[in-house]
Amino acid sequence: MNTMPLRAVAVAAAFLALESGCRRGPVVVVTNASGVTISNVVVSGVGFTNALAVLAPGERWALRVRPSGDTHVRAVFEAGGSHDSGNLGYLENSGSYRVGLVIGTNGAVRFEGEAR
Image (cartoon, rainbow, N blue to C red; front, side, top):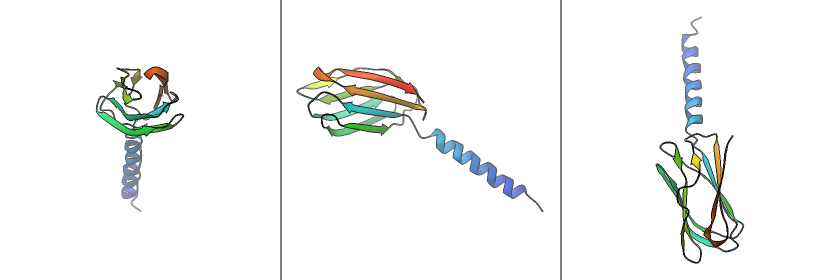
């Protein structure tokens, strides 16, 4: 019995599983801890821009992003005026990264990073 085609299928399946796992991308969790509704939220970095229309007080959104390389994360939003966090913490182009952006009072944004 020739097991060569079966091996080829197994190798191809393992390769596809590995590739799909590598393409997951990191997660950015945006939390509104400001006590007011914020709008026009845009989270960006090298190779990605994700927009959220509105975040109510206490609301949290998890975004899977697709950076084109390792990058800083930035958030811009409106809450009683325009706010721009500037470049915050480091984010690797890896599905094992999960970082948080916590939007607090007076438009301050705190970065919380971790590799899983």
